[in-house]
Image 1 (tube, rainbow, N blue to C red):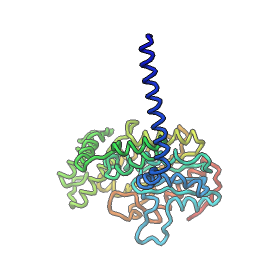
Image 2: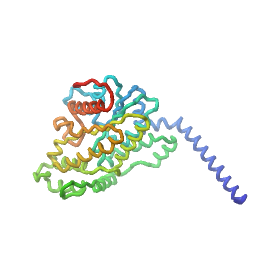
Image 3: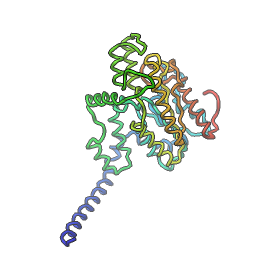
Length: 354
């Protein structure tokens, strides 16, 4: 190496060092000036990670709207998390609940929980709709991804740059609809018997076009629309390429590192209505997908509570594809979660009815 080359390298190195120092100074200035405001505007999730410490909770329940929704006739409006806590009086329950969130959001919340928190057990809601392209490309995803950026363990200035350059989902409605349509075509599946459709898109189009149910019976436009929603939400076959499965994998690894007992609570769907409208083929796919979760995570030490059939049709209070239950439905889910916890851990909960 010549003296001239060495001089050039040294000169470049000094400039890089000065640039690095400048960025560090700017990051410090930003962190103590505008960052708190940006965090407040763009990240409501940060406060959720503080709940275990604030509430001295040793059990944390993470859920979406299923946790805090209740029927118009309910006099008992307790959430699923509260019901679980009431069945386990020797423990302090913390509830982290936000509508439309999924496993990717739960991971960000969990990894930001301070290490000094008293958490011992984490119960994570697994909503089977969240694996479908309709949810993956939801019109709410843009706002959620902005929050995920702010939850990153990264320099504050770097996160602000990611927001400025829109390093998150920022589709137009037309682009989003196109992504959903393409996603439905990728929602492929195989049944153990001959079936005329290979993906959710084909099945959805045929049902809508023929205006009839799986058994050939004609139905009203509203009923056909509801049937098609069920098909789009649940006609898929899970594998490790699904982004929500990768999120669940990350949660399992995180909980293992932190020494937390992890529970995956598979939510109930309206299986009574699904069997009536979409028939046994969709039911078969849904059963297999729930079993995929069980078989993938139980060998990894995760407690998987399969609540898929725990709630009957009469306890769904909306005539749409949601996981919103009346008191009896929420109670059924809470009791099964506690039952499974007591099989695996000495939680010493109070037996009996809520």
